Length: 249
Length: 148
Image 1 (cartoon, one colour):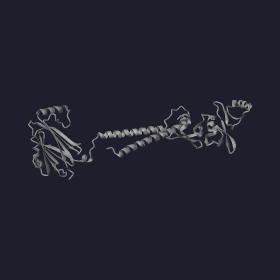
Image 2 (cartoon, rainbow over the protein chains, first blue to last red; image 1 turned 90 degrees about the horizontal axis):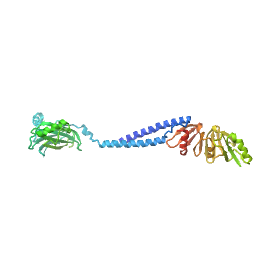
Image 3 (cartoon, rainbow over the protein chains, first blue to last red; image 1 turned 90 degrees about the vertical axis):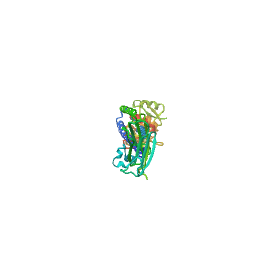
Image 4 (tube, rainbow over the protein chains, first blue to last red; image 1 turned 60 degrees about the vertical axis):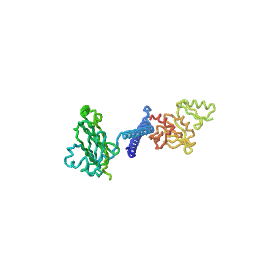
């Protein structure tokens, strides 16, 4: 937000410019009137007095100052402010298929239980979310959360799409990405990590064959949002939010 | 009755004789004036150290009033006058002299420098270094005359 120092800097700058303008005009006026005194032709055009110029300059300075402050405030009201700590934090997540979860260290994580993580389960519409959230401090080797998502509805699902976003505590998006068109799986697992207290918001979209065709047509027109997903064509579309506490005890 | 004449040399003797024949005395120090249109005084009579002096208007820097005293500041010194300032204003050529405040008439030819101010006022430096002010009441007429 605009602070007192900024206002003082703007005001002082305008005052300096105004004083300089009046001073320069004063010197010019003084030079011209003494020249005219010597010539005394009486045909010269009357000049504005320094007093008039001073008054006009003060009015203009006040106008410029008011307009500047107004513009800055309007500009600020249109700007979302994010704390600096959010901008320097680490954010990442991956969307994995069941076969990916069999590889390397990922094999140590399961949909049933994970040591050091709080387990939660939520069914929204026809999607079951089973997620695990770490309460430990941030480290690069252990994810902050794991979300297992399964479609449990009656439709034949062909593809799915996703959109994952990290949000500030004021629910302002800091980082995120999405995808569309992946073949459906028994379940998918989203593993993410971050170095700061924040919220992870996950939206999942499941498409049947018709929905998949409609989505592809929609994508051809490029008239879709950046996630490349649309709840209008999905047979199931749900969103969950996970609160991540990484820096507090 | 005493009368002072400010008329051109061509008519001076004629008018003087006319008035004298009617018992009117012509006196340079008289309070009553007879003036001719577009005829202005070429000299003034001022008093210095108890003596009267004839002061050419070309030597006058400014005429100042201090209470009831009228002082001519000239190249040859200061002289005291009997006339009132408004009388002098009408006697002197307006192309050469200008009233710049309630108490000062200045010779335009003797203004050395004009210093403007941010208020409606000018500060004039005369050729002898004397400083006089153009006050608010005379500001616009001064601008008009000088053409600034």
